Length: 169
Image (cartoon, rainbow, N blue to C red; front, side, top):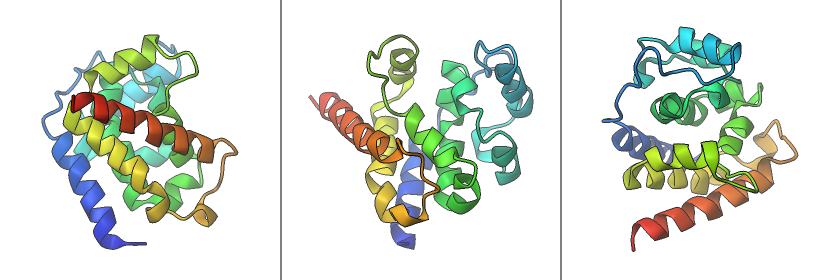
């Protein structure tokens, strides 16, 4: 793995999300009455920089259950967690799930569009950079492999590339 590339991708994420406002204690979890509450309780009062590997491991499957503001705020914790702890998190499918949350559903709008609107151009670029460099950082043979992971990665790269191109117009 190229350590310089990993550090560059991480730095882009940290800078892009450095000023993201905390969503508020009552705006972390999404609408799910079980998982939304669990993740809200676990992350309440914590900055994304303070989310530990242990916390990510115990909430490895909760990213989709964050509110749109919670997702916006805590996404960098998951991105950085995968960058620096790929093997530990990939064992639970966290990497694949992370990628799937960054790919628009076939008929996107609603929740996906609401999340997308919150990202600044710099954050969008950092997300694209993460996806674009994913294979270079984590060769496919190291993936736990969800059958949709490759397709989602390709679709995610294309989607975020188009978003960035639109931002530049």
